[in-house]
Image 1 (cartoon, one colour):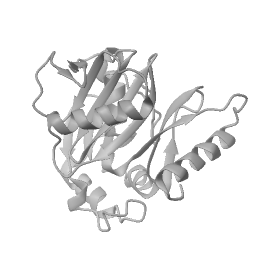
Image 2 (cartoon, helix red, strand yellow):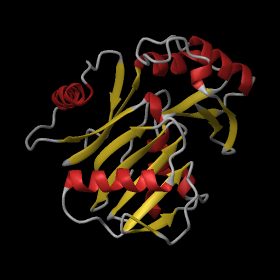
Image 3 (cartoon, helix red, strand yellow):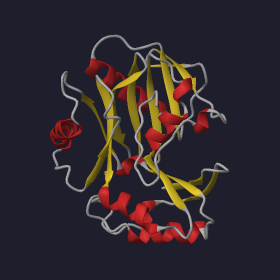
Length: 256
């Protein structure tokens, strides 16, 4: 979990949650109190400034939901997305905070975080800080680099314990799958995973692979699974594209 002061864009702390969360293997029922207390101790007293909290992808669940034609009521969309979640992950959505851009049509990226974690962060107060947004790492990175991501590509988002692979078509995320890993992925393993996902979707691979997050040793402008490698660079403008309401879990697509 990483906490950033939004005004200065200054990271305040980065905390490995698995060292602080009892029952870590069961994200929905885990006691998040120790992790929030550790965060508060590390960031210290605030003066009413806004915080941006980023949660590791290992605590999140990602999937694509196809919005049916003629369905627009929020309750109905969420019920259908929950059914899809249960089919994919084999568990109920009870205990998960599930959000997406419900106004969108077609294929939309949906994410869920443990409800207890979101509620604990929102209620913590964190000594004078305001929690402005809570997002999993891949969503944060996709939003931050949105303007640099091509309309046709694969995106590999690396984390400490896995890699999330997303297919972008016509500027929208149309397929996503996270692969948990016990160590930082190497180039050969990444290529194997990409080729398997390309076969799963069918059709030809796009010309570009974008890489974000904790990267393996990759040479810029080299090729992987037949795709040209694009190493995206953070800049001031891109870093400010993510917006959200206070106290909410903001979830935005690649195009925000």
